[in-house]
Every structure is written in structure tokens, then in C-alpha cells.
Length: 183
Image (cartoon, rainbow, N blue to C red):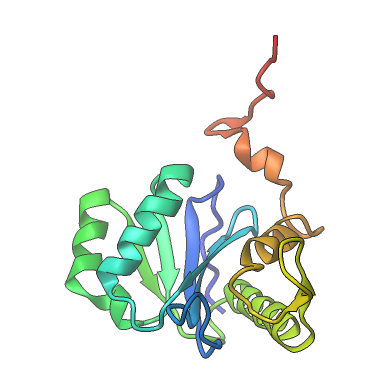
């Protein structure tokens, strides 16, 4: 197994992959979920999307909803999805000085962290769709996967294997900074 470089800070090296084959949700516009996995903190971000989203759709989603919060990544690891191999992504990586690395799912040269996260999300979504989830503003159980996606993300982020969210929010380049003082 070739060792993947370990990051020195949150959101330096990420994995991106899609969970596909989900039932249609959100008025029929979502049937996939983009999963962004941070190697440093082992935390994730889930985005409902459509399996036919273009490279531009994906780039805009990441720029508008992730980079503004995390900063520019040093390296993105993804599979050989056509969205990643497009000229648009090549140009974006040149523009930002980032590196795009390719891996295959369950390849023995990767450590399986992202694939494990994908399987956990699949299991959570399968349980929601099969058994339902009672939400405050729903009448009875909901069996959709899209509405509770933020709750699933929070459940994953607050489980024992991840760095606490509060540490990610107050992380600075040379370590963890103190909480802001409230007068």
C-alpha cells in the first residue's frame, strides 16, 4: 500500500466522491449525494445533488458552500469521474495551485477512509428510507433521505472518531487558538 500524505491542518487534503443510486428527492431533483471528507479531522460535508450534475455544477457547489468556509485545499483525492478529469477541473487546479490525485474505489493503494465514510452514509440513508425518521415539522415518519441529511452529517461529525467541531472552528495555521473572548 502506498501511504497517502498525512495533512498538517484541517481541510488541507480532502476526498470527494458521490453516493449514487438514491431515490429521487427534493421534487425529483436530487438522486445522489456528494461527500467531501477531510483527512485531518475525519469530518465530512454532505450535499444532495443529481448524478448528471456537470463539472461546472460541482465546482460551483464546492466553491460556494465549502471553500468559503474551509479555504483552498492543497490536494483533492477523487476517482476518475468525468467531472474531475474535465478541462475545467484541470484549469481550476492550475489557477489555485492545488493538486488533484486519482484513486479507484477499494484500491489496495488507498487506505479506505473515504470508502468507509461512503459506506457509513449509505447505511444511514438506507435506514432512513427503510425505517423512517420522525422530524419535528413532519406529520409522522419521513422516509426521504434529503431532508434529514444535515442531521446525518451532524451525527457523523459528533461521533467519537472525529475531531470536535469546536476545534475545527477555532483552528489556525499554527495550532488551536483560544476561544474568542466575549465581553
